[in-house]
Amino acid sequence: MSATTAADVTAWSQALDALEADLAETNLLLDGSLDEVAPLVLRRATAWRVPQGLGPMPTELSERATAVLTKQRETAGRLARALSATKVRTRILDARPDRARPVYLDAEG
Image (cartoon, rainbow, N blue to C red; front, side, top):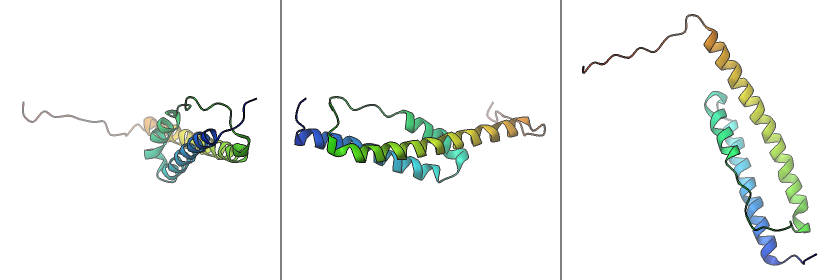
């Protein structure tokens, strides 16, 4: 097994920093209106890609990584609830018989 270098710790720390920043931003968005934010948050959350070339995680960062994973799971639960609420609201609105239909008028001919 190879020894952990300062560069390994730095690279992993930066990767964890990015994950934490994404989680903070996602949770701020989720604190807003669910109707407006849920699709944006879901797109943002699924856009993340695994950083390349990190190698094994340094042992000294395992506690921090576990904390990030716990926060990710909590945020994933919030995302699921937001998406479910949006779907329910959409079904309710789609089921209304008196729902206004868009009308377009070409006034310039």
